[in-house]
Image 1 (tube, one colour):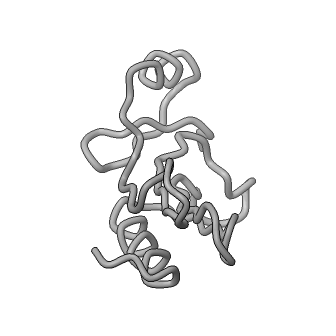
Image 2 (cartoon, rainbow, N blue to C red):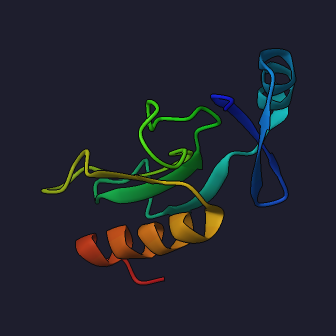
Amino acid sequence: MSEHYILDGKKPVPCDLMTWARWLKGAERHVAKSGDPKGEKPWVSNVFLGLDHSFGYGSPMLFETMIFGGEHDQYQERCSTWEEAEIMHKKACQLIGIEL
């Protein structure tokens, strides 16, 4: 299985290195961002990684949610699908008190 993926809409599609590299140059990879990254309060980012971070164990881990700042700084979760990523984003926002 490929370690490189691009998005076709919201669906991850395996691809070769050159296809991935060309796509990545202009891709908008954010699923969601909540909070103000330039502010003093914690914020949440959820991105499509484009590389499988499962390291060969189970389903490809292609999306990552992280919290920046505050007591949960560097909190991180990864998942396989856009839909799971949206759920993880909401969970992280709830954890730090951001209403969506």
